[in-house]
Length: 637
Image (tube, rainbow, N blue to C red; front, side):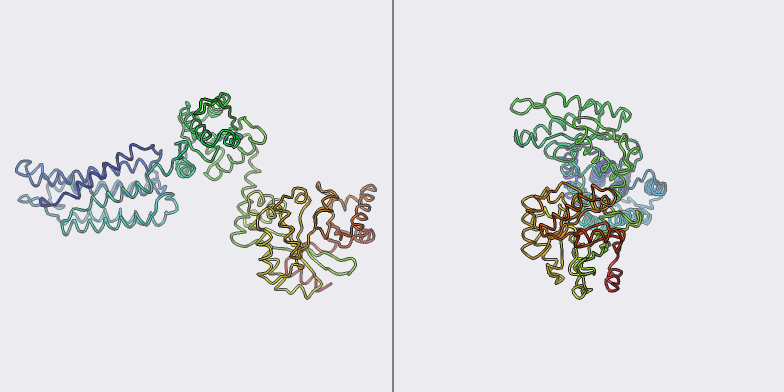
């Protein structure tokens, strides 16, 4: 050891000091794992330094003396073995495993440190770990105990990194595992070939960790210099694991896009920086996160019971002007919501969902005001989120079902078409009504993928059951206005038909009155392309919304489906009956085909056929049924 070339250790000390300076110069990240990394850095720096000192004492043993050299060697051995323990502790912190709360793991770490301390402490008397005879350092058999402890720590790290890799939000396992394997190789070379490269490799591991995991730049918003949304999940995950109460104040700036358009993005960024800086300095001593373009979260540890006063303080600041770089003053408004955790939300996802709902509610109903989420009816939110989860799961697993309700042709006396209706059954929620999950799918954009999936199932049904050989001429498919607003929707629609060799005349698209009223340029273009390809359109639920005769005249509808509630009212009220008769007469005069929905009795069937309805649909004929039952129904007519 006295003849070792210490160049690698000098390089290790230099790079460790450099990493330490970088670490201390950046924004401090409030996580136990980051504090554990600092301990790891200091431990490795101390270990490398002690190895240099120990080597120097061996070279100058005549000056230092036997006891001095033996003491520094003991400290050097202890420091390098403790490095394995501190590294393992750090890895477990990254995996969100609380060693201090887990008695078994806690005891394991205490035992590991105790074994290393005891073995090296008694070595002065036993010389079982290493010897120092005639100034020559030699490893003894008891050192195998130390190596065994290090091996256990190493295996714990490997298993943790692989098993809990999803918990490492920023860490990339491959580079870390690569450098760790090289550490083992270098440790072996140091013991057998006396090449002191172990500390340099440990330093490379620390550098890898700093680059991927500890670099504050990856968790800091560039504009406001506050923490970003990426880090919010990591931080709150640890907070919920702690179980200690904390509060969150959401600050959602109102109409901030107007400020960007009016004053420019540079001024907008300057104002955002000021808001973030202000939130970081208010009396609550909270941690500030920027979630999006105009939204901040303030996570408060202290004064949880005073959250309302914190929110009031923030709102009062927004009643004062903010200064721009050019010296102008701008008034800004912000809607605020606050939540107490785990009282109002016991997980990160539920907290985010609750605050998103509350912020949206505040912007619509209490702009510039303050809302405590505990005062809101969160049962609706939780139900909505449960349904949203069920819809996403059904799409991912392809478990959405399509049922078919036959439509009876008065003239032909048979079922000539059917309406495709989506059905959703969840393991937890059971059967979910389309009236509940369709609006949620539309709100979250899942309706686009769902619609294409349903269309594909309908086309497969038409092809596989050879509907063209039956009395069924076409299947009606409901299309959401969200789908029609998608550029290129018509092309994708026709492509799915082509994939299953379905002719355009075998599909009829149903759209609601709301789609007709709010149609945009893109909607009109998609409809035009589909009509030109041979697709027919139906206006669904006519009479229930805002559409009028002008829309019927200018939209390419072939069928008009009269809303079932209008049908039912016509049998309860004479005025409603007269209104229905004149409506049917007008639509017939326009040479439009009429479908009466909600037909439930023989009386209704006879009357609606008599007054001029061409097609009848309702439970009098059949409810919506699965594919096989529908085929049997058509075959049995």
